[in-house]
Length: 206
Image 1: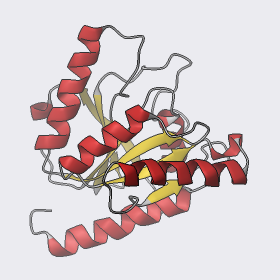
Image 2: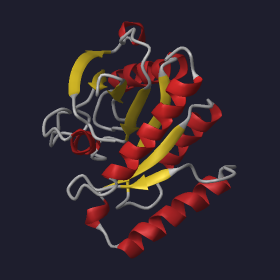
Image 3: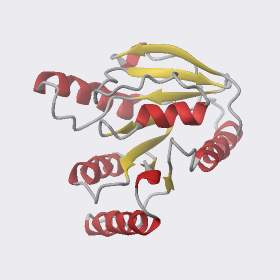
Image 4: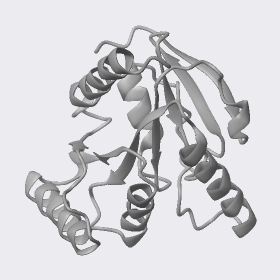
């Protein structure tokens, strides 16, 4: 897939105010400082579509971007960011939960994980929530340019081991990416394109 147009549509914290268009949505979420904004900008060929910041936790709303006029990329707040207040964190968690559990247009979420670190409990717990809630998702490992191929392989293996220990039958589909080097760009976009084709072919709502 080639992205020709990417347009910011709306930001809000109320799922009922999300776009009414019945277009497939792909939500991007991960711990703060995982490189989400940089990844979104890389995928869409826009330097400043998603706001990058040296201050983690910058995304605090549900952000909708219309891509190629036929699907939405949804930028969600990070989870597990320790430096926001408990009250703010609970608000984030509520509307993130509302989005995942009520948004009919969502066809797939991408859970972003920083590949530099060994398996983190908070990521495993979040993916367990997604699995238990039957929300389709893939994993995007970010910042692959920062460590060696050997470490990448060992960290992915550690995630597989932890997920199997948490009753997963198999590892979710995953991608290894680098926003700096555009690694994984074609793979992620081609996956979205394939899912879109299936969605438009098989679901009369879209």
